[in-house]
Image (tube, rainbow, N blue to C red; front, side, top):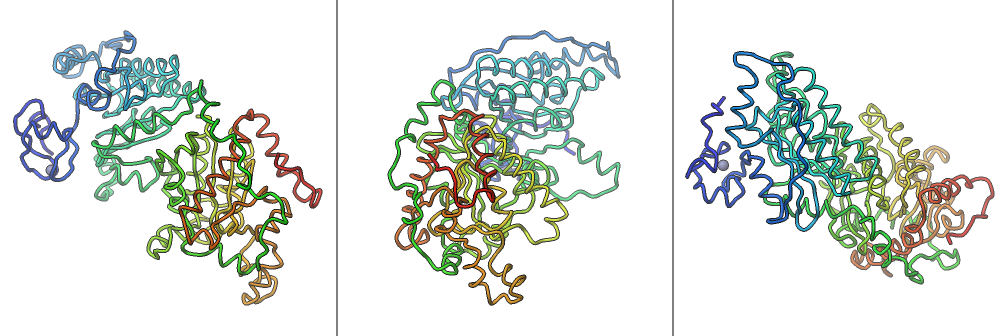
Length: 569
Ligand SMILES: [Zn+2]
């Protein structure tokens, strides 16, 4: 290993040697590139001061109230007294503790920011850091503005003994208060983030962004290798590894942090202006949703199935691109994986913040379709969608789901990770979500995989969509004992929009361009946007209790009173 003390920093030398590719970079240039190597992209460590200067709008900052924690509570001495080590760290960094907290703005969005400094006793979590993080969270709570935590830490501070361990619980509680108050928390993981910080406030954030190459974990790689004898793969615990394993939402290079964070911090609906934001949606748009059966085009059932499966129909990400401003895709189930067959993230629909979640088949490209599992999610996909729905509920944002899946995943791995449980948990979660939910069957609505995103206040189907308990092929194979009878099964299953509206399973049909959604994505998205705005315009003024009661009533009626149903109005 390199000797850390000899490592040059941008402020200390005219020339900096890159730790990624060993190239020498002129100091001024290095600072211009935010201490990132222009050759290989290596992200150098920043001091807390440098970090906040890079992130916060110039001139926007003000201090967070100071809190005085216990210093050296155990009177600890190893080869040197802890009190001396603490004094040295203070002298060397000019900081009181290993974290610096400020109020300020990022791209105009108010934020309370706490940035850790690895130079200060390895960014270790002791009573002082715990007190400052807690005070930063309380400041967020008092002013109802989002909290940004920039982490860099080796773990809990041994010299403060078990009191250091308690800081994990203390800071976690402080974040719980923000959950209860609906205040957004974002963490930015920088290299390295380990131990007690990783297992508390760093990973309890609503959105976790990581810098490229940043490592995060509870146990460090050396401990794991020494304890188990296991050789760890290259890139273990790096941001890119964590993204693949569902632990972080995104990996964002330093140069893009301000715009990405600014966008995310601007998402929570402003408390005072919530109703103004919905104003653009409330105007009823005649014809945006077709609600009368006789106005829905008759179509042969098998033709409807083939149309719903058309490889060039718009995907969820196509729709997101056309419909939403400031859309940012979030990743991962925070458990094991990031399933590509379900995508989602926050964005603005006509100014209204919404959480968009949908199946994603991947479009016409075969390799991409394979990567997306042809739109058949793993359990991690449902769990990711559940996480995003809970975030929407916390922030008071409506949820929009776009459904396009052949059905649940027929693989053994999906069963091993609890596919049935994951679907069932989504049904329960959606039945009590305290924010409006609008679901649109934009393509294939196949079985439980579709319903897992479709327990909504308004369920709509695109003119070219279908909804069925099983694929016509599957039904034909079981009941007709002949998969060639799929068209007959499709007719018997009554799965196309006109029949779905007659059954009351959908509340309305979303028109498509004359030649189908696949013929003109922009026009299809425009029509979908009108329908969503109409449906949300009805629902956004409703209180949570009314939403949940009506939603449960909607699904309670199925199978009881036949064709009769209450209108959507
Ligand atoms: Zn380099």
